[in-house]
Amino acid sequence: MSAERRRPIAKKPASAYHHGRLREALIAAALRLIGGGEDVNLREAARLVGVSPGAPFRHFRDKAALLAAVAEETMRRFRHEVVTALGAAPSAPSSQIHAMAVAYLRFALGEPAYFRAFAQAGELGFFDSDFFKKENQETLDALDGLIVEGQQRGEVAPGDPRVVHLAARAFVYGLGRMYVEGHFARLGLGGESPLAVAEQALAVFERGLLRSEPSRPPGTSRRSAKDKLP
Image 1 (cartoon, rainbow, N blue to C red):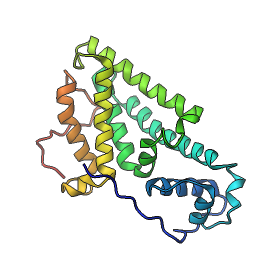
Image 2: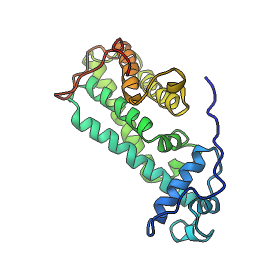
Image 3: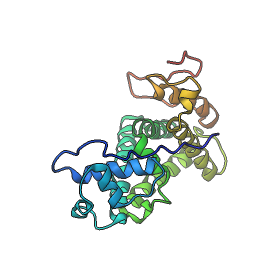
């Protein structure tokens, strides 16, 4: 699997920010730096936004504060997808696990800049944020509980729950990385609906993990991996 190519950061500001939204513009600039494999610092973020080097200090005292803001916004967006999906899904463990997986994929494919940051949470110091750490742990604990309950009910494959947890997360993480690194396009997949392709791949994986077909909210249906790709 090829390594992600680092994209050079533009030497000129990409666009002017809207007055009064400097904080959001600096977070977006930090995401650009992260996505390009560059070091995140306030001076470079200011240059990308097109403001003076001292302007970021109105909102962030230092680099760590900027990264904490990126961490918290990343987690808010991720948790929104997860909570929304779990609330709409049937209560059976297999259905809830499926909903979490699709939520992860929606986040990765719909918010690639934030997903890239999420994937580097440890090295970027995101776990220094109490909010990020707490919300992340709640998500992991929820998955653990669903796996154990699903195994007890015969809906999830038997085995060490920690290994099942690892397999489930590794699969959706890998799909997300393959999308942001351009593998969907190189395989001729995705087109205008990369999420549909990701869900078909997820269906293949679930046939080996889940012992029962996860039910879905009324009006939705699962595409078979044999269906014609979009």
